[in-house]
Amino acid sequence: MNVSEPGGGTGGRVRPRYLRTKSIEQSIQDTEEPDHALTRSLSVLDLTVFGVGVIIGTGIFVLTGSVAKEQAGPATALSFVAAGIACALAALCYAEFASTVPVAGSAYTFSYASLGELPAWIIGWDLVLEFALACAVVSVGWSGYIRSLLDNAGWHLPDALSGPEAAHGFSFDLLAFLLVLAITAILVFGMKLSARVTSAVVAIKVVVVLLVIIAGAFFIHPENYHPFVPEAQGSVSGSGLKAPLIQLMFGYEPTTFGVQGIFTGAAVVFFAFIGFDIVATAAEETRNPQRDMPRGILGSLLICTVLYVAVSIVVTGMQKYTKLSVDAPLADAFKSTGHPFYAGLISFGAAVGLTTVSMILLLGQSRVFFAMSRDGLLPRVFSRVHPRFGTPYRSTIVLGVVIAVVAGFTSISELAALVNIGTLFAFVVVALGVIILRRTRPDLPRAFRTPWVPVLPILSVAASLWLMLNLPAETWVRFGVWMVIGLLVYFLYGRRHSRVSEAGTRTG
Image 1: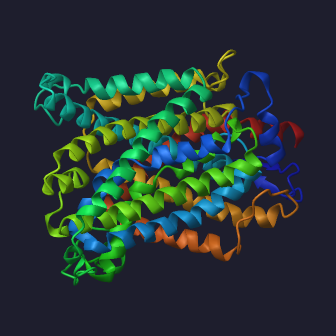
Image 2: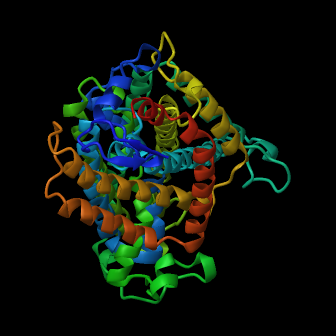
């Protein structure tokens, strides 16, 4: 069925229902409905803290060692720079959208305004998977750090309550389950409380990271940097579906070390940057989104990139890259210098840091789910806002319980690659959306404008696609299955209950 396109600068074109866009004005107007209005309480500092809180996590505490040892050597710092540049390109596009369309939902809301309803559904469905899986995986990682600290103190949980990685029969990760329930309660009680908890925890985490940089600098041995870019040593490709998609499609085989190894490492450490886009999901709860969203997004990304580069330089200088630990490189590097106290402190910092990562991932997912529900693409019962706390408590509670159960029964595995492909897919959509909205709504007031359009968004798309092609083919297969399920849900439910399509039918 085709319906006319009302307003929005589209010239009254007739478009299929599933490609109808939701005007910026309508998106903002929906945020003022009493039963669906979120409380605006966040400042630019809160946004920056949220960004730093979710970005600094598993990546900086784990990936530094694996990339240095297996892909880039001391040049891991350059891998972080390359991944940071790819994220910066996307961040500039996010900044324009988040300041122009200050509505919950991030890339979902942006694509609804520029690409249409079906593309918006696809990206929203993608983000729901990305944030849910990431939250579950990070919670399981947090549980592992806490169990390690408890073991050091002489307290041991039964294997049956320590998760699948600790037992061969039936097992349940009690700590991961309880963590997700706790952060769910915090998010229900209000964004300001969430911001305060996050600020306190992020402060601890940043102090630990700075301690690694400052203390570690005294144990650097310059000879460990030679060679800074180790000579290429062969392919890192797997076989069958485990091989990178770029190898199956074009015969290109990424190598370990050398210049190619730096970019191969960038595809791996990209996971460490995931999270800055979550800042955009809080646009509707920001006091001055037009000014503060760009600052929060770009500021948190810049801070974390500098810290990542500094940590990788220090760690590869403390210990020869061939001897770095893959599981706990920062802690083991200090152990090699005869300072186990720092190793314990780093483990504590990692555990504390992953708490905020889990909370902000759940925050991002609940806001995307809330936005999709408010638009009618998911049951509208989930878009009700708590009359006292001003939060989407129903969607937060439902998602929190589901993720808690998943975290309880899930081990950290290669499924985490789905988080990467989901995020990169969102980056592609947002960059394309900037180009399209510049053409369809050139008159729209923009507090922040992405520079060099369309060149910069095109570079963002190219960088994201390159990183996606370096992911295993099996990741693409799993991603495709999830998207097929999403399309079935859309055509069986979302398309029938969409508020935009219903309004278009009445006016058309």
